Amino acid sequence: MTLPAIPAPSAPPVWVSRPETFTRMVDDLSRQWIIAIDTESNSLFAYREQVCLIQISTGETDYLVDPLSLSDLSALAPILADPNIEKVFHAAEYDVICLKRDFGFTFANLFDTMVASRDVGRSSVGLAAILLEEFGIDVDKHYQRANWGARPLSPAMLAYARLDSHYLIALRHRLKTALEEMDRWSLAEEDFRRLCDTPAPPLESGACHLWRIASGQDINAREAAVLFEVCQYRDERARQADLPAFKVLSNQMLVKIAQSCPQSEVDLTRASGLRGRQLDRHGKGLLAAVKRGMEAPPLHKPVQPRPDDHYLNRLDRLKRWRRRTGQDWGVESDVILPRDVMEALAQAAPREIAELDEVMASVPWRKSQFGKKILSALQY
Image (tube, rainbow, N blue to C red; front, side, top):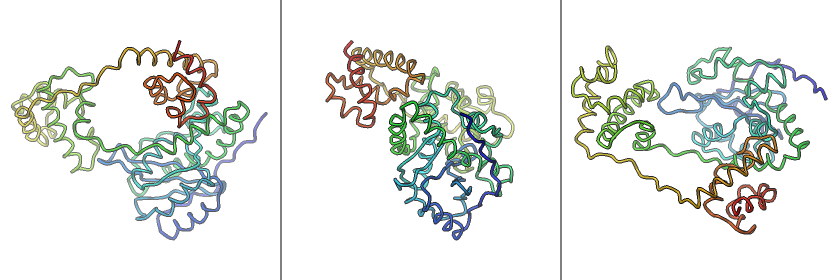
């Protein structure tokens, strides 16, 4: 069946940067049964990422909310938490994390068009690809990595931003129809409920940064102590400049400094390639950090205990069952069984259906659909 084309937006978006406009928008949203939402953040341009724009679309209006100008967005909280208002996102996890982190919002009744696309077995699940295929809309992704914390935003950026939410409701309708026709609506609902519970991650400690940066590198305990100190130096400079740490000094440069432990600016240049203005700006501070690291106790990487062979065998059997089932359904294997649930099952080693209740509490539909097959795979 050929579906009717979806018209491009005609009226301009509503820019929401004043309390009175925000109040009118909230009044409008509270009367809707469905809205679409997207966010833009400034992770490439600031020390601490923050939400810089919230796009919200109804069937009639596209709103562009400026959280940098509004001191209080709390009136949105009841709408996002209202189970009677469906919130449509594309790739909701990141948006949910950011909105929880910055504003403390909670969520109920989500529809994620990317998750739904995966659940019906689409091969291309990026929004740009889907909009082109479904609506013939060719979205210029040039502004995807733009500085959304800058003001004023250009007309082109505003036009780009509104498209990320404008078509989501229409796309949701098409995807829900496909899910129902394939008898996969219950599967998708389960995924949407899990998304509502996505936690905002805690801030990483300096030690976490260290081992992430050192991952895959040949680095000993003494060099790790030096790397910790040069990472701390970079982090402080990034905070002062309100820049992402990688824009101050690269991870690769820090690892090279830690591995060579330079004692002079000449050594520092030789080891890292740091020179000119960067050397003037960071040379003394980095050498002082190296000295602190050399004098500090060596840092040993935390040892993660190796899972026992019984767990690994159970996990391998579940992976093989999940892969075969995904092929039969025409979907990626993690659609059949999310990784966290699969690992919990391998750890718990259930033998009876009743023992699945706790481990699969977040995926009751999958338990009813696949429970016996999961037990069979575990006991094979």
